[in-house]
Length: 545
Image (tube, rainbow, N blue to C red; front, side, top):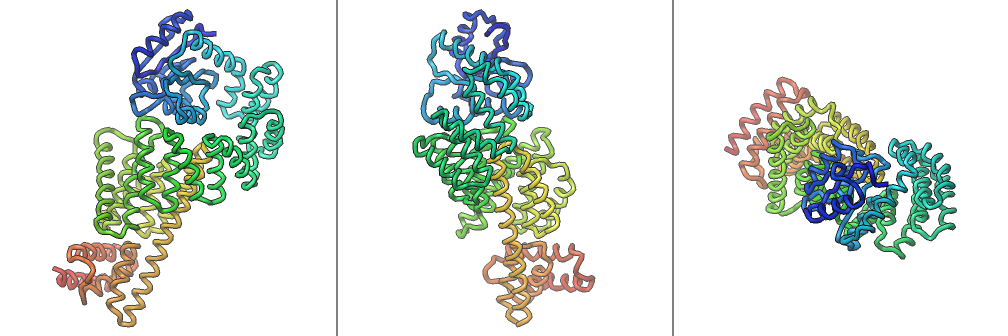
């Protein structure tokens, strides 16, 4: 079973590589059929450029890309065929590692130290199983789930030793085809035939697909009462809470699972999305940072997520009362944006990365009142954004347009973001992106509504000769919707008569310059109105000189 197959050994220890190579040699595998590397990134390059039948990968690599991430990259990019073998080797048998292996759904794993016969037998065992049902595994690789169901039916009788494995594939294919009622019947029968946890989880997932969320939750909670560290049941319960729009409860379940196994980067991203959806932006920034730190160098990396770190910090600054805390958040966000820009300038990077960086600068400029640069950036992004395929980049474009008060461009970007979030194969990640979009939309709408209300009350105060109240509301409205010409006109008029008491002269001058620029570049005011705005601007600037 082992001969004429190509092997790749990935381990950060020379000794471990030499040992595994020697064991394969003793099983009559020559070195011509064995490649090895101690470097995670080189391992990914080798997998991308060569066809391997068996991959033996250390879990705890010294590089930030561990064995779990290498396997994730293999699955994402289909770097080995469905009937090839991937085994993790590790000296760590802690609950954290074992839980991660369950989530990854590896072919098998081996605990160091292992003996020659155990090593060879485990490889042979997996090869035999995957060879026997290779046609079924290749159908799943092609997402031909109906053919996979037919093959499951044909494999049960000749391969009774793999019946549990085949049945798990069968149930999973029913769920993927959204045949939830058939899946429920199948899993109900499977629960009668075995005490294993997988049919119980499958039954809960089928009930969830049928909309019977409370029944599904009860099943997952019963499983967790017996097996509190079962990762699939915990993840499925969190998924149910998301579907029920119980986001805090979903976060609680994801965080419980993350304490058991913090190595899963995809869960970092899901948790960060949910924190952002609930406007807990500082925690979201930390989650996005942890995700990016883990996945840099893999296909999971997203420049849009990278920019979500400073954007989340900037959003957090809007909800922070203390001036120093607010300034610290803005400065940290600025540092992240400049770091990403430096990366863009170092090498020829894809257009998405440059647009992500520009969007971060645009939001920073908008929130700091640098309206002219914000408008220039927003206009450039509008021109270059037609082919952007990164969900998080498009989401941040929508945020920028929303903050600026550009409703048409905002709605267009939100529609594009909704289309992109449906492109992931992971249902839980997709739903977290939907919740993020909904939260972002509500946050922007709150801002636009508040800006409109403040503008209306400012105009009302002005009509009733309440100049101080009008000025205060006009300045607040400007921070909410800076591209709205009416608060800009009020600010010019009122500041020509009196100086705002709550702002420094430098802040007032910056706002006056921005208001005048916005007013002059809006096509709604008439020539005479713009001429009058110029006079008011000069009077106001003279007052705060």
